[in-house]
Figure (cartoon, rainbow, N blue to C red):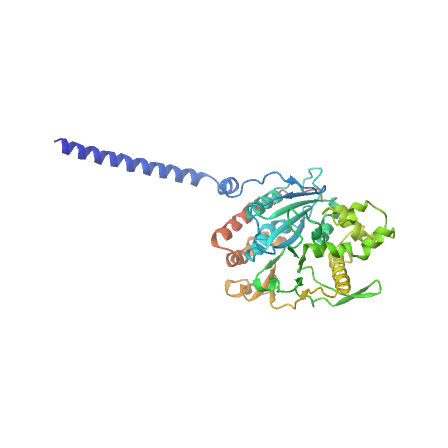
Length: 396
């Protein structure tokens, strides 16, 4: 009789236990089901970024990533976006482009240019906050590069060639810095490897012919991509004709600190050199394809040509383009899984990406580049970014 009672009690206990467990599971399911995905994503997957830490650079704020790139000679890709641009795709693509470079073993430095001092609408935009959160999640360095809004687009191009003045807390002198664009996605890893016994490389170096300036002939190099050691990027300015002109007074005088090897990575440093070379063109309005638009490409080409002319032992690997580019103008059938691996890189569309019809093939591209988890997170990032587009900055 006692044994029979014990068995009954055990069975009753098990029944209560299983019912209780099922209830808990059901409650959790209902809570998660009723909780909007955006809340879960923002609070768990992508927490708001910690406040930017102020570096020794007075006009550039840096956010230190949680991840470090470890290798004998680290490689970093640097690209930039203006926070004042009406084209929000440049900001949207920043974490996707960052992850694409990390896929190839590069660290990433993303520079946001614009007016951060007056808490402008652009600096507080939800799109910028969302992209920052994702970049932090990826472990990329993000820099707020302070400049007037009228210079922000121009500076987003020019700033890339001043990587030699980045803080040592981010990049060492022996590390490599590669210039690129936020709308260019690298695909083929071998295109971006640094050959032994070289001082870096210029990809697609034979693309652009030559030009005349100051009674010299210069080879024109593309900004995507130039990969040199940080020290060489800085030394090219230290030995440049522009610095000599600034020191001897041929260009307007300024604080000589900006002409030292310890000059800050700042608008003031970039302006001193660029204005000395291009004069009033530097301060003029800029439109796509005009002379001002190509200042960064012209100036970097001049610096490299002059430096190599003065240092015959410098060995920069000037590579021909090995593979084709996946371009928006190609037939839509090319934006499919079987074809992605046949291209060396991809040039992305701009704000057309916010049309769901245009995003559909891009979703396939994300699945090709990244594992299913990250591709899924990028897809939700797209949806969240899309929901903010009614709130665009008004201080352009």
